Length: 259
Image (cartoon, rainbow, N blue to C red):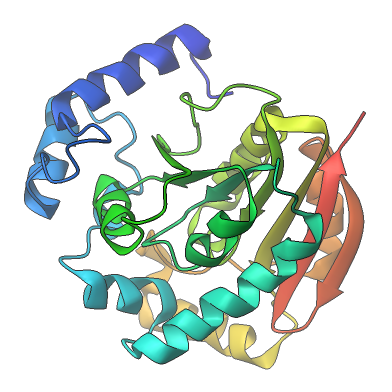
């Protein structure tokens, strides 16, 4: 949990929720990206660290932010492909959490196979776009992530957590805290499937060099790279026992709560 204790976190989260005034049945109440940022500032800045980088104006802008392409067919195919990694762990009774759901790229294909899916994102705007894309999906619940905390999701309430193309956008220390938060919400027999960009892959090494040479190190949304060995060390420290690690361009880690 973040410094300052659970009580402070709950108060900050409540302040931001009231400032945004956007409940599940009023997806457009916040008024758009500028209104969302303004509301966050009025709330005292709670959860603002990463918010400003994820405020797309429409679905096309969301695709560009999430997948670096506005090709809708490729975007949907990537969602189906990543969702297929989750399918073996699902049952019709499963409660699932999508950490960093964006506009519902993966949730669209996972939700029909489970009892309930928590769509979680730091950006209320992304949650609005998910509601729009998945308006016919009845088993979704929405929760905002306040930097790395998810106060609306109860502890030990989720069977399957997944997070694709998300943890890389957090500072590594924040990613560690996010992993601890995912451990908190997982049931004792739950499972998490998580991805990290692989520094040992040429594409991410090139990206790392580009960030260094172009001054992009101050870009909060840049990709932070890991090696497979780092992932295998960090996960247990966050309370997640490694079941399997696949390393290609992306490192895909399957893990369970440490008992």
